[in-house]
Length: 440
Ligand code: UDP
Image (tube, helix red, strand yellow):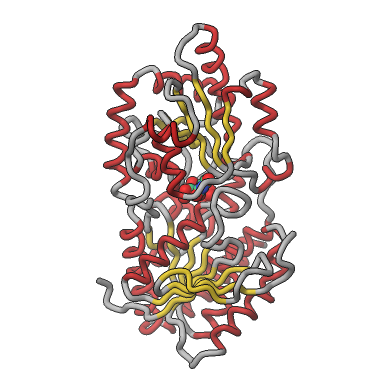
């Protein structure tokens, strides 16, 4: 147990509510992260208050979401019609809502501010400063990393975001990174002080995502028992590259059809997100263009229990993303005993044990993906062995462990704040100077 435990924390999650269904729009792994860690921190005796933007007139200002977990819906701008890219203009209004919530209580109400994503980091910066408590920040994704490996036709993240991220990195008391790779990126691309970075691996809900009967799962989902199933799960946008998986699977679908072999089905679960919202039918159109529309099934975003059935029904789950700070889907699939075919980018190299629990593919060449998928599917015995190893591998990533990691980070932040105010001010001044020089 860490030496100093916060009594109550303010979690800032401006653009994504932990109560939203993930897998569409801006709701994805971050929602799951915020929710799962909040519940586990609360079980450890920490009161958690999550601030998120109200996106519907029916959002109650305060929701008691779980024992010890409050969700505060802050009104900042119109409920609907705002894109994530519009939110920088609402940060002042959002901050006012956050500060107002604390002002209603006696002073010293929160011991830590934990912000998620750079928009929240901007709000957290102000709140932590005002309350005199440490700011712990998790970036989840970094614009500089995303821009370095963009999908064809995807839009660059704006400089405004990089500058905003940099400011948060500069002022945060501690930074939480998902993997050592992300920690290294924070240092090399954002000049973060390595001594304030904690690497805390996210997890999977190991009670919900368990191995199970594939045939029963298929029956439950209305899928044929006598097919090979490859699944894609997640927000449908160029960054996630579902088209790469589809293009790789299409010749295998054709070959199985031509040779009268066991048919192959691609199961796609999720909804349009990010720049994918500009052409919401692009993937379905591509399936038609490739002549495999009858072998591709689309399901809208599914709740976790149903998603577990999707993973169990699949022979292989594909995660072809261009960048991924971790990749919860990869761990969840493995927790269900399903091997993963993933791009060798970001945290996926940690989430998947290459050759043991799945296969990592370098780059996004369709022929490489097709060959890797064909090889995996051609060896059912190897797939079974990978599935068994996958569950064991996934057990290394629990949300309980993640919550313990966060508590250690909070504790370090509180202690450092108490003992090191002057040294930190000096360090900040030094970093601001070097940052200004870099911007010039
Ligand atoms: N998810 C879900 N239902 C869906 C699709 C996805 O609940 O239909 C969840 C999934 O379980 C995972 C998260 O969305 O926890 C996606 O996280 P990941 O890290 O894979 O991608 P991100 O959305 O963070 O880019």
